[in-house]
Amino acid sequence: MNAGDIAWVLVASSLIMLMTPAVGLFYGGMVRRKNVLSTIMLSFSVLVLITVQWVLFGYSLAFGPDLGHMIGKLDWAGLYGVGLAAEKNYAAGIPHLAFMLFQMKFAVITPALISGAFVERIRFSSFLIFCFLWSTFVYDPMAHWMWATNGWLHNLGALDFAGGTVIHVMSGVAALAIALVIRKRKGFGQIPMEPSNVLLTLIGVVLLWFGWFGFNGGSALAANGTAVYAIVTTNIAAAAAALTWMFLSWRHSRPSVIGVATGAVAGLVAITPACGYVDAPAAMIIGIVASLVSYNCIKLRNRLNIDESLDVWACHGMAGTWGAIATGIFASKAVNPAGADGLLYGNVHLFMVQVASVLVAWIFSFVMTILIAKAIDVCHGLSVGHSEEEVGLDIAQHGEELYAGL
Amino acid sequence: MPDSDGSMKKIEAVIKEGYVDAVREALDHAGFSSMTAYPVRGRGASGGIELEWRAGTYKVDFLHKVMLMIVVKEEHYRQVVDIIVNVCKDDPTAGAGKIFVSTVDEVIRIRTGESNREAL
Image (tube, rainbow over all chains, first blue to last red; front, side, top):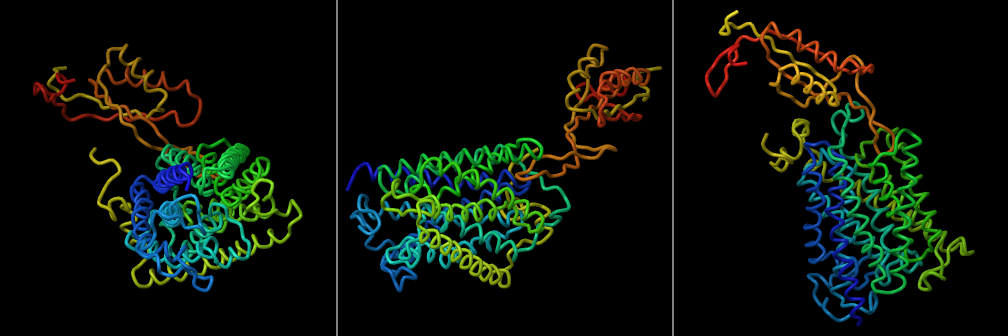
């Protein structure tokens, strides 16, 4: 074991921990004033709920000893046997516990990302049930397929360096699916729904970008050259995407802060599966295209009149889809010998595998999310009543106000 | 006119945020130092404006304005209105604002208990 590796993975895990509440700030700034606390609470509650789920059985389902290439056995439930010795199949240089912690942060952030789909009308108890079921029956199996030893997508040769498919495609598609089940916000498309605080959104993005260095760089699971590549390409893609979005918004009218912030997120998402496999020019192209894709998907979603309120599908689902495919185009063994060559280097196979793995993620996440959301809606009700929505979820669901007093 | 009479006017002027300081200064200069300012949102004949969203714009129906509330003796209200109009009318764009004048029944100064025109 290597002290440098252990130190880096612990720091990276801490960086990612910041990202889940940061998603709450990012989303909280974009909702109306009466729903800011409720929106932030969605992300924060996932942090605490899924941490417990992960320890109890989530980690074992995702990474435990393989059962038919589909799911992990419960040998590691309650972290039984997960200790300071390294788990050679996953990370030889760090204690198994450190690997478990790092992966926990990924499991935590994924349902938090989905929460942008149904802000301002979700019933909080339904949200908790949804996250628990979704994490258990959708995230944990997918993480197993892609990352666990003997997972079937892993065996197929699919590359997903830091969770572009497992985290972003899955959460983005789930957001679209649940938005088709839950009712729209009252007055959606008819009355203005003004963002309460663009500064909050910007602070959220700054923390996300900062945390993403741990997210992507930490996925090397060692303090090595791959981690360096991952962080450098991550930064490049984020900047290129933010710049692109700024010009898109400028061309339309004026360069908006909320636009440049959204662009950064799209770039960070798209580079996630590719960051440890591609070089700097590729990262720039990945970032630029990510903004073009997400920007136009937001417009499309608007035209289709779907109240997927904060565009998780456009920013995570579609930028993630582009990133996974881009990995099949730009990946290079010169950057990472443990990876594979992409289409650009004459390897069609990887490209096809990447497309297939994205398709699997789309179908699996979409179908499972519809089923879970429908079941909760029928048994418990996904959304609050119109009068509660009118008052705002801060008061109606949490009994609190963002600014109390006069 | 005795100062215990109730001949007083209330002036409520909805103006653009950018003119608040100039109006206050002009009124101060003319000897009208008391006023109350409210941040308000409103709209006139020209409607709202478009603001930037992530991709595209959204319509805002109510614009940020400031409402100044000033109560003066009846014989002074025309002077106050003229000052506000003069300062604010150099803005040729729509939305320069509107002034409402009404009669005040009674005024009481809390500290001394003085009433009506004595209390202004």
